[in-house]
Image (cartoon, rainbow, N blue to C red; front, side, top):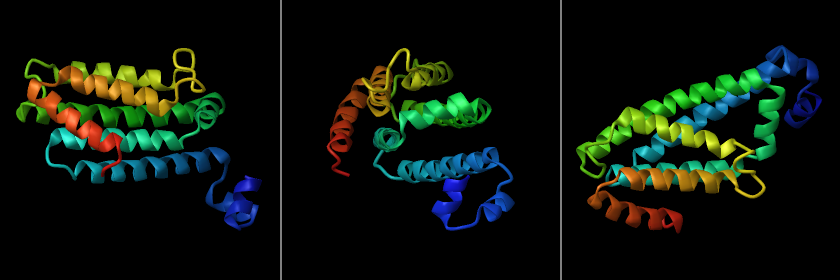
Length: 182
């Protein structure tokens, strides 16, 4: 709290008037970050010619966001503030799950995703795979950066549910966004 007050140029007393304890401060910071990410994600989804371009654009938005997060911060959050970490993770996961189901359904209507795909099951499988991104026992972050693991999971998932038409579009958009042509 001393460091935060100093960085903000306010007294520690003022900081405690705004946030009675470090848990409230951390919760407020995480909530603000989640809201900013949600808005940026919505903005990213609003662009693009079709659902696949939107999905690949959002994928790269998240890849770039993951590059900004320190594995140490995430580790410390889980270790020292497990209740905040768990609540934050559950809220994010629930919102993402419903958005993935929606995107799969749109992709099925646009005939870029296979019609035989069960959207709920597919979204749940993807969410479980995303849990692996931060699993240090499975993907140690010093060897497998979060962004790289996320990219592999996401692109293989998208390709796995795609139609032939979808695969062609994925290849175009994947190259476009991977090479930062946007």
